[in-house]
Each structure stands twice: as structure tokens, then as C-alpha cells.
Image: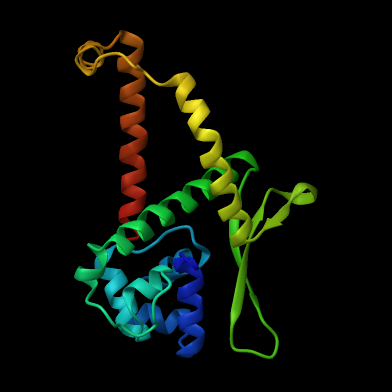
Length: 202
């Protein structure tokens, strides 16, 4: 993956000379939601992604950040089921996971944009932390952190993995303790709240 959805969205908006307000109107999307997409906090689901790609006259794979031509060359249904499409989805989710962890560690991570003087383009960076302790990371830095995390995962998983027979694990999970039941109920409540918030950005 060469880029992020947020970066590609901004690039396409600049190239097509479409403002956030105009894109919101064309795609029937609240302008506040378009701002969330530009910030990288959320990504649109299928129907809205298709509307945005059509409004911006770009291919969906390109808009998602894949290293493909900007103009549609392969049907979306064919691309998403290809190995390249599946790889893009894995990498995109992994990079978002790294940013989410950084946001938790440093009390916030915001994707920001800077206009490149002498051009019609913008570039981006992540601003992490607060006040005097804030700092920047670039896309390459996030990708490097993802690679570093992968190298650390193998020995960690080796230490914590559950190697018992699967039937034994299932039996234990089917009979949770009272503490585990309380934890599951709390997690379900948080999940329901998150889904309610995410529905606002569909």
C-alpha cells in the first residue's frame, strides 16, 4: 500500500477542485462526516465509498490507497476479491491498528494536512500527544512501527499462546466464571456503544 484513504481523498479533492462542502452535497454525506474521513478517523463503508469515487472520478482501489491507476481499470468486485485487494485490506487495517495504539499511548493521534507550496497538493502527518510533549510521525514511521511490531509478536505469542487441545479450550469457554460473565457483559455494552457511533458514519 502506497498511501492512506485520507491522503488519497484529499489528493482527489484537490485535483478535482472539489471542496468538502461540495463533496458532502454530491455524495449526500454530512460535511462533519467528510471531515472525519479527511482526518483519517473513519473510513466510509461500501455505498458511500462508491459515491465518493464516482464524484471524484477515481477508482475505488486507488481511493483506498492502493498502488493502482487513479482511473478505474478493473471492476471493483473483481479487485476486492483479488489477492491484491485482500492484501490491501490487511495492511490498511494493520496500519490503523498501529495508529490506534499510538493514540492510546500518547493521549491522542490526529492526522493533519499541509499544503505544499507551489503545487495544488497537500501532504499529511500524524500529530501525537498533547502540549509540550506532542510530536509528529509520518506515514513511513507508522509503517516502520508496524514492521517492528510484527517482529516482536512471534516471541510474545510463543510465551502466551494456549496450546491445549481445542476441545478443552471450548469446554472451558462454554462454562465462564462469574467474573468472566461480568467482563463479557461490560465488553458487549462497550461494543454496542461503539457500533451506535459508527452507524453515524455509514
